[in-house]
Amino acid sequence: FTTSAAALGTKVEITAVHFSQQQAAAGVKAAFAELDLVEEVMSLYRPHSQLCQLNREGVLRQPHPYLVEVLTAAQELAERSGGKFDVTVQPLWKLHESAARQNRSPSASEISTVRDLVDWRHLEIAKGLIRLNRPGMAVTLNGIAQGYAADRAKAALLNHGIEHALINTGELDSLGSKTTGQPWRVGIQHPRQEDAYIAIADLDGRCLATSGDYATTFASDRERHHLLDPTTGTSAAGFASVSIAAPSGLLADGLSTAAFVLGPAEGERLVKHFPGTDLLGMLQNGRLLRTSGFPSSRDEEAGV
Image (cartoon, rainbow, N blue to C red; front, top):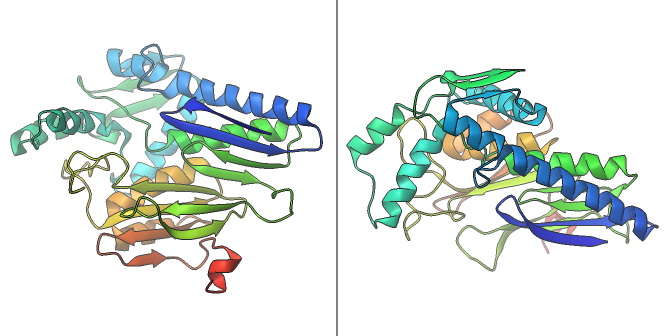
C-alpha cells in the first residue's frame, strides 16, 4: 500500500507491506499525520508554526516536546562538531538567498554582520521555554527535521502493527523487507549526474540521509550552495555530497549536514564517534570516501 504527498518541502512517499490493506492504510495514514505534526511544529513555510513563532518573537513558551527533542539533539551535535552544525544559521541562509535573487554574492561586510547573529550557544532550550538571546537570530531545522520526520513516521507504522515498510521523507528509512523477502534497495544520487547513482544500498534497518551541494544552489557552478559554514559565513567546500547511515533519522540527517560542513577528514572523524553510524561521501574532485559499514547492495559487493 503506497501513498505519496507533498510535505516537508519535498515529495514524501510511504509504502507499507501487510496482509491487510486496511491495516496498512491505517498505518500509513497515521504516519502522514505525524509528518503533518512535524511540519506544524518545525516548518519555516507555515507562518503559524512554532518555529516561525520563535523566529518572529525570539521566545517560545510551552514548546511542543518534538521541538524540544530536536533542538536538544541539534545542540548536542553543535557541540560535538565544534559549532559546524548550527541551527541558528538561518540569517546567513536568508542573506545568501537574497543575494542570489539579485544575481550577486554577498559582500564580506554583509557576511560579517550576519555572522554575529549565528551562534548556537545563544539558543536557550528548556522544557517550558525556548529563547533566542540575540535580536535578529533565527533557527532553521532544514538540516535535521526530515530525518526526525522519518523517525516519527516509522514509530507510527510500528504502532499500527506494520513490520515492513519503506519511508521517504527526503531521507530514507525502512522496516523489514519487500514482499520477496529481499531488503529495500535504494540509489544514492550522483551529485554531478542527474540520472546516475554513486551507489546502490540495501537498507539494513538504519536511516539513510544525504546532504549535497546540488540540492539548493545560489550559483550555477555550485560553489555557492545552501550548506553554509557558520564559521566563515560561506558555503562549505570539500564534499559534493555526504550520505549517512545511522540508527535514527534524526542522527543521520544531522550528521550528513555536520560532516559535509566539517569536510572529509573531520567529517569522517565525527561520524566514527557515533556507534552504528557510517558515511559515504563524494568529494568535489570525484573521489569516494566510504566507511567499512556503509550499506551496499549484494550486486555492488559482487562488482555487478
